[in-house]
Amino acid sequence: MTLNDFISKFDTENTIVLLEGKRSVLTKDQHKLFSLGKLLATRTSKMIFRSGNAEGSDQFFSEGVAAIDYKRLQVIIPYSGHRQKTNKAYNTISLDDIKIASDREVVMQSKNNKKTEKLIDKFVAGDKNKFTIKAAYIIRDTIKAIGTNEILPASFGIFYDDLENPMTGGTGHTMNVCKQNNIPLIDQKVWFNWLHE
Image (cartoon, rainbow, N blue to C red; front, side, top):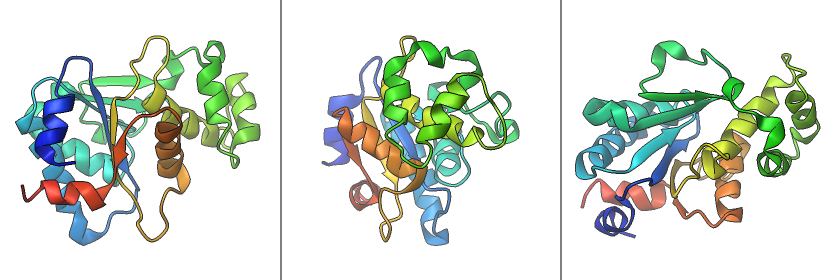
């Protein structure tokens, strides 16, 4: 998929594009994430860019978008105040403001992450502590992809992954949720080329 193909298909109203990935970004790649965020915000006018406000990939992508149009940047955060000082988004949605227990699909798909499966029910039931907070990050990652009754699902996912150990951790969970829900996605093997089109 070329950049022009992507724009012509996805620059429409109510399109949500995930811009996110690993917290650890190679130094030589950091400017590329910023450049892509800036490029997409410059070349499009309707799509909304969504991230999880994490350090690393989310931050670099978001700074690029915000440099052009911060009003099209949305973040979904695991709890109120999460990385507030570095949050560049116009629209911030906290899990604290979402009735997760009433959204069975979010809970079910979050439980597909076997590392946090047992913590999901505890967190949803209101047991919030230093252990169950891990569940909040996975629930946040699920919602970023499939949305909720009030939050639109993602239309497309653009990721910066660890190509030597792909689709692991929270990024891998989000990518898997996208795949399970037929949300198209790409990683830097594709979008690095967009920077030269």
